[in-house]
Amino acid sequence: MQTKFVKSLTAVAILAAGLAITTSAFAIDITGAGATFPYPIYSKWAESYNVKTNVKLNYQSIGSGGGIKQITNKTVDFGASDKPLKPEELEKAGLMQFPAIVGGVVPVVNLAGVTDGELRLSGETLANIFLKKITKWNDPALKALNPDVALPDTAITVVHRSDGSGTTFVFANYLSKVSKEWSDKVGADTSIAWPVGVGGKGNEGVASYAQRIKGSIGYVEYAFAKQNNLPTVSMQNREGEFVKPSIESFQSAAKYAEWDKAPGFYEILTNEPGKASWPITGASFILMHKTQDNPANGTEVLKFFDWSYANGSLMAKALDYVPMPESVVKLIETSWKNNLKSKDGAAIWTK
Image 1 (cartoon, rainbow, N blue to C red):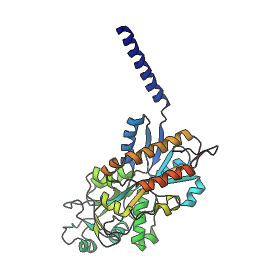
Image 2 (tube, rainbow, N blue to C red; image 1 turned 90 degrees about the vertical axis):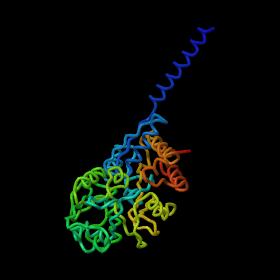
Image 3 (tube, rainbow, N blue to C red; image 1 turned 180 degrees about the vertical axis):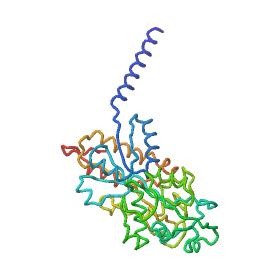
Image 4 (cartoon, rainbow, N blue to C red; image 1 turned 135 degrees about the vertical axis):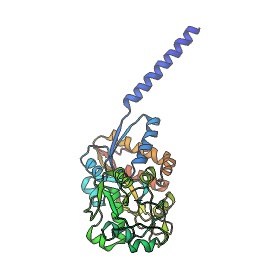
């Protein structure tokens, strides 16, 4: 009897092992590329999702410009961009997009004696620094905003992105809204002709330069500022209030998004109203081809984001990102059903 029992247990173990191997063998790994802005949370989601499903996400944090290029060339399952594509751009490329997460772009400084959130800037002064009109930290315009801060007679070193970047788009879009001179001379795109400064690749590169260069100012996604212990500034928002970057100030700006009225989810969240709103808030978007050459991979991408929306909110908040509200997730998943098809016209998302 004992022998039969042992044999039975052995058979069950072998069957379980076989099922595990089969599950592993049939797990579909997915690939994505693009924005560095959401990389910290995509990495966290991917780690947890792999534990739950055995599906791996290989995400290349190469900048929004690179992500748009790679999805256009069909070298990845999805692209990621912090610059939303306009409806006509999506139509031309045969793409659809949806927002994955909301966060904040923050100016960071390396200034002796200045602590996190202590330095105050208005949109105009920030634009003038990046226009090379304000070149010293003790400039009268900066002293007027910061009468209680000991600003040194030190040259300002501007640090910006060197690669095609959605973070740059969000930052430059904000500057275009608060400075006519910036709008006329520079404008907003993933790559722009910078009037001044040194370039770093990715949020990682800008954070690294800002950390090393005394007297510098740069801009990064908030998680990178926190990870690198870079002092952020307080920004004067549309209502004239000085606010610090935080998940609460990002949420305040995000609540004004009208996703249900935005064709192709085209929504830009800079300079939104609200006394508590952070003025340089932005969403990060996922780009996929409407007609899926490999529908199995496309479905796995959607499963990943479906799981992330449902299970990743606490992880997102821990990194100071704003999760998409349930009402918006419903809009997004309806758009999956309506827009993402296999070559034979069948919807790849039927949940």
